[in-house]
Length: 234
Ligand SMILES: [Zn+2]
Image 1: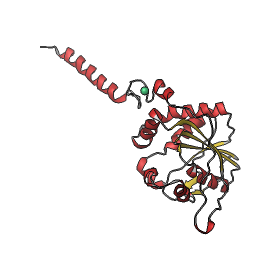
Image 2: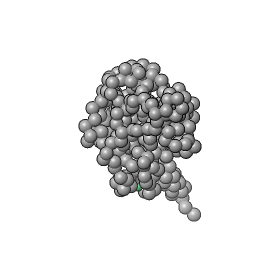
Image 3: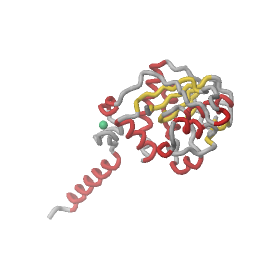
Image 4: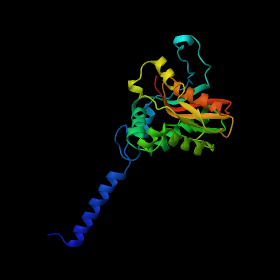
């Protein structure tokens, strides 16, 4: 029979291993221990060199063919929405893996630096208050905090508010419907501290959300708005 101290020691080892299991970060792409996203998995995801200029569809009804001018002049996305980045976006948004924002935000900051993006302030695309209450945090704000810390830029989260909740992307229709849905979803709250705004979000699909948010920012006094997202869904 084993002595009490030996039993204690093995229990301690067992407890330590259980804690390690609980708290050792594992890669969302390959389950390897050490980081929430390992370098090989991240290196496998294509980086996007070209910026995207949001287009949009002509409006229907009596305003057919009349589009309001785009408020967001350009959207830069660091990664294609593929592989480990797709998984990371999912885990950051829906599984509460907030720690992912550090590494993802670091990649976005590096991208912004490489591009030489000039901005006075970062603004994360806000969530509707109902969604924020459900999730407990805004993933775009977590990314913006990290980008801001690394670029030495202030983050203003209250310049605009989302006043209309969004449809989940999966159940919404085509691009035209997407533009229509988010058109008046945001409202200016206060002037952003600076005229050149870098709008931060996790994913850009059509660019409609970023553009609607940029319209509100311009109404609040922003002069120039560009977007930076972690990923672009093509
Ligand atoms: Zn991995």
